[in-house]
Figure 1 (cartoon, rainbow, N blue to C red):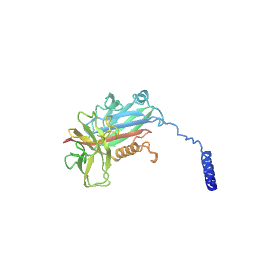
Figure 2 (figure 1 turned 30 degrees about the vertical axis):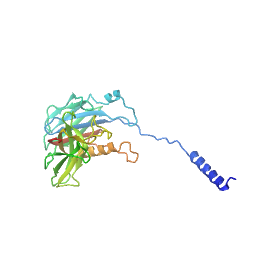
Figure 3 (figure 1 turned 60 degrees about the vertical axis):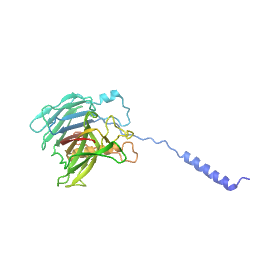
Figure 4 (figure 1 turned 45 degrees about the vertical axis):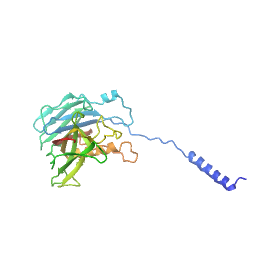
Length: 292
């Protein structure tokens, strides 16, 4: 004989399941219309000419192919950098090691510590402006060294000691390049920091290798590491607050990409006129380490 309590239980369960499915609704999300903007990524290092990359942003939900990537490069622009007395109209250049490979480069002005540099870009029927200052390069207290990580026989990180000045608000960025392996300087992993937690102190820190075209995923067993035998050039940079805010926000956006629990955000920009990106000055100090 069938237990009547079981009949009642399964009847209620069936009704609940039916009710659940009957409450389903198709939700349509209205995404905001795409607003095309120029993306400016410009830099002027001490003792080097300014370079500026110009592209157009792409729709978040759009497909990407080779022709779209080529068309995103802004090639018919007028780009001028000024130090207040000399105007340098940048010329178009090509370097396949950069992305995008087409950019604008100066020929008259080289960066000088303590000076302010003004950027004016005329493109896509609009004018965009920005300014930045090259600060005194970081004071590295000791030479940088390589140290193997635990449980690794050939992989490790770089270590260094920064001597931070007494005034608060100093910001830093680090790039590295492995000779014979990297064509250009690549931002280190977590490349920017400020002195909020170590103002006026000697601060010991590690340098982890940033992603490049040859090393872009955590699936790579050498991801973030340097290897015994590598010759590494380290580029320490002092940057102003606006440049720091851009790179920090861009870093946070990159690491939160695809995470549904993160609050949507947009990289902070110091470009005026409606553009995106950054115009940054870099007070640079270089060191070389052989990993051994």
